[in-house]
Image (cartoon, rainbow, N blue to C red; front, side):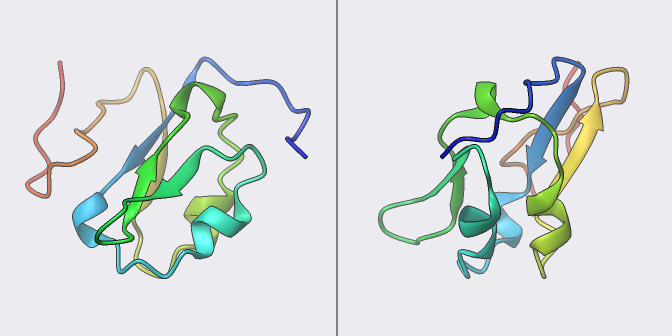
Length: 88
């Protein structure tokens, strides 16, 4: 069952995939089924980013600090970039 809380257009889920150790905790915690596992590595991937409501459960549950919920006014980082390159 998908959470009924509305999607917050002012928040964005930022994922550092390179930090993921494929434990799957975040996938189980996500109430809106935003996250999935990459087929080969089983690392987390965004499968429905437009459904994220910014609840932060993935950020709280992840032991490897893979997730950050950022406000759109913040400088957002690239999801796959381990070097922290900032998007315009």
